[in-house]
Length: 345
Image: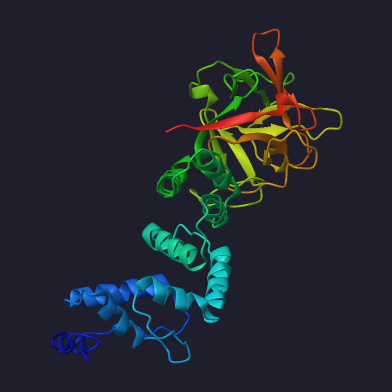
């Protein structure tokens, strides 16, 4: 009777670290691939010889039918054992819990994700997209990727898009200290503050308005810490964050009146609670402003709600001086409450 494994090749195998024993906690196909690589590395190419060697590495509690001599037969036997569905369920649980962090190496994350998909037998592209999106903490970037995934029918491209967006996305986040312009979505005009035009005679507060289709120095604002807080330069802002807005050229702060019935928005040389603004995602559905979280980034259609008066920033048609009036008005769901931020430099 011929030996199961070529005897001349056993010594080389013996002095090399062997693949792990199969005990039902591994993915059978990945484990067998390691066995095959190990054998090929040592010159064992015959399928029956490789299977014979693999059987020696299977835990005795896992019974393999006699005359199992092929890779497919071995995989079928391993998957028919009760340990396989338990392992698959465990992998699926881990896949559902998997979260991507910017502190992780992208290659490590993708490798773990692919391994769990294979172990959990997740082969459907829609399911793979679902679990990849589920790994993200940030609702905003999840929505961006979901839109980009919609018409992609190759998993390799899904991974490439995922990697590209996550590498690029931090450059699009608006942070405390960011220099931005604030564009009114309906008219395309920019929130502006130029020369001092008092809101009323003798006032130190001056008018803000919307002006121009191309931003200039009077349309540049800096995202600052809100009154009463001390945010560090570079800290990320999020939907529902409290912020301040300082006009870069004049150093005045975007503010709002706290007098009953007065809905004026203006630039103030000082800073108080009326200078605090809440960044909210614009929606046309009542009660949904606070449902979506995530970082505030380029591409977000937002409302700017004054934190003290609870009224949103609003703009309408041009006034008698040819500028577009800005005030606090509306319920936050109107088209004239929609704004869009762009990062400058």
